[in-house]
Length: 155
Image (cartoon, rainbow, N blue to C red):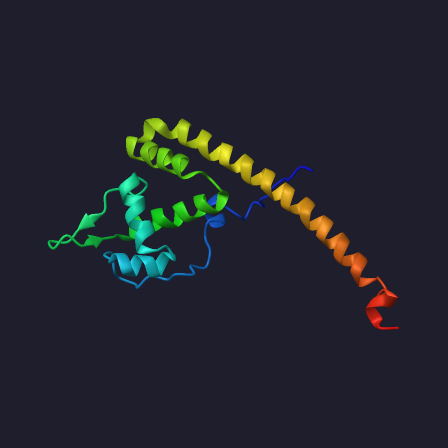
């Protein structure tokens, strides 16, 4: 089975990334505590600290008391990381991608290749899920038209 994505002329690639934010941010702010970011992203504070420790998060600013202060840019990055997690990309590959981003524009070909490989994996998983859905739909259909066995009706 081959999966093909079609995009009409009116749908720009940037528009494909626009969606209703399930974790809205307060307007006019650009500094957030780790607990606020956890609430906005759905990620735990532990996960956020771990992402920072392994290099998946860029440098997170700190207050004068040492408390992490996340920016809107950090939240945008975490939203992207969340999407990468949904693709099934290994954390090691996400860290590699983050390192490539930090290394600058000269790494764009490597970043593109990593994302293209992930895209192919996602398309393969989608095809597998569609095949699985077809089997489930068939099986559900057989139950919908089946008469209960006599031993099940008490007759």
